[in-house]
Image 1 (cartoon, rainbow, N blue to C red):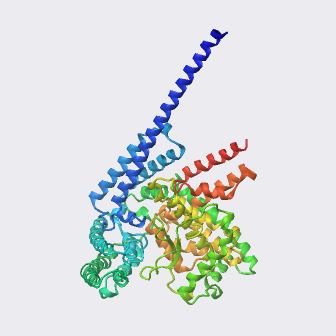
Image 2: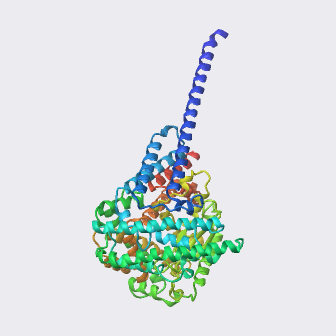
Image 3: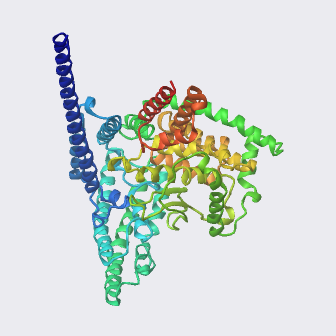
Length: 601
């Protein structure tokens, strides 16, 4: 009897031993692949900070605060191309089969990131058109120069770092003029209507005494720990920098804009009028929406959304008893003094603080995680607020610098409050502040994913956040609900006018009129918005495309999970990945739906 069972037992032991060896080999392969991927991701992030020290500063990494590379040089372009192609090849060489689900997602994201940036380097537009009224680096440098932005001014070394960084920035300014002159000869030039908005921005920085200049801000706010000798020395150096270098550089650029660039400005509005403009716009659509949608598909979607939201707006018009047309109701809302209750910028800021307090008690009903990073509402700096939109600037990665919601208030008495609740939800809480801060605070994400930004995801989340207002106890005032409809309409209109401008030959004036006909934004704001789309084609498409995708995924999860659906967990699933291309987000949510289903089976 004993002999009868010896062979099967031995066979079982041999099989078990083989299986253990196979398992160990698989585990070893997984460990090697994981280590390789970690190394690639770490090096990609670190090399990226060195290549873009401004990004490092905004992330709270202060190692490169004295640097400002010449982003417009051929050498810098070559280094970018080598950077993206090297890391693309390295990450492609790692076998998916040996990676975890989270690691595969990181690999997919890095491949997307390197490919889209390599595609972008094939276009000359950004090199030859480096300055505009809305997005260019000179405006962000003004924020840093004030001493109230991400650039720290706490030590003597901080102050000297800024002096060094300004030297690099002024080199970039010289290169910008050189590149724009080259571009003028090849057909790369801004529309004249945008150039006229850029000129005053440079004019305001090209005159006056050093003591009154924006770049003097840090001197007006020396830390108390500085000695008198240090203060005197730095004051002298900053005066010299501003008077002898900064003001002359801005004056030179201003004079070039007025005398040479403006006369060559395009009469056309769309990007297709520059060399390779049609292909560039296709790239911009892919970059900002992270989809393969065509301009025509997006245009048609925009028209349908405009019609749908118009019907919802009609209901609000009837609710408040307004008897005119919807367009007349727009004008009424734009011009109603009842919706302009403020006399000072401080009251505007306090209004947003009040919104925050009203919604706080209901946040836990929708979210099971909240950011640790502090949050502030501030007025946009005077030098840029006339052409600025409300915006969010992220806090630092370590949480020591708060996230800041900037609100432009050029004239408090004309400030209309009807969309403030939706604006706060979008730019601040629960929109950008939640999405970005939770990403930065997620210790399970590799560093490179904590600072990634995909507009389709980030702006899509922010616009989706506006739809949560009623669940948070907001939108009880019909005008505030009309405000969120107006905000959603604004993003739907963008689908129509951005594609109209850049793929259908629309003029600036046609785009302005379409916006005025279909939304309640004041004319000055509409003009600023249309010119924004002209300056950065495709970016305006990302909001609605992303919002519709997130809402589609929520609807799908609710339909398939029924009573198992937990809105708080859905929001966690969307936010925990950080910014990702929309297709990768959809794949993740589909996997989550399947996991929840299987957990109950």
